[in-house]
Image 1 (cartoon, rainbow, N blue to C red):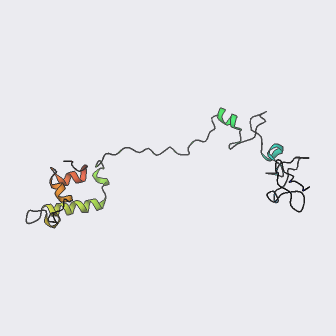
Image 2: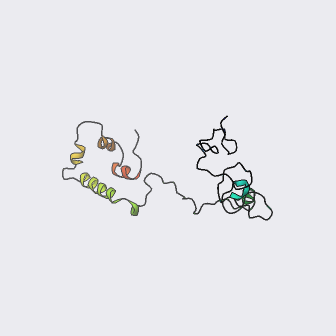
Image 3: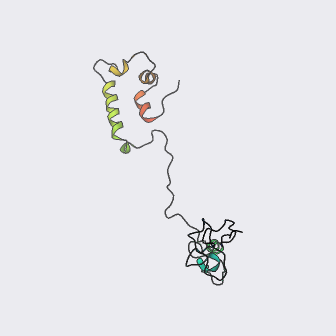
Length: 158
């Protein structure tokens, strides 16, 4: 008959040493007399002192974070609270960004639109004279004020 591992509820056969299985080979048993549990801290299992008791006087339960057991943590309102308030974001409507926050790239685009719009020949220049594909410029020509609509609101729907 092969010897079984010394740890509680372990059904694996012991290795050549006759005491522990291959899973528990590098584990140590609790220092308490005839305790079959695995040691976690200070050579003891949880039952025999690996974890400290609750700070509440007379409480036999083990500590959690903060020094109190689950019951006393909840009773004292010591649950973990966020370190900082959650980020509050205001909902922004399309185009509601104040002019001081507008990206410089958009300002360059606006300048290009204005230059194209006030071209010497009165047309929208090369951008509007693109091939006859229903493109952005033709679509914008259907709107009342294409430049302002593009920059401040969603495109018009026909």
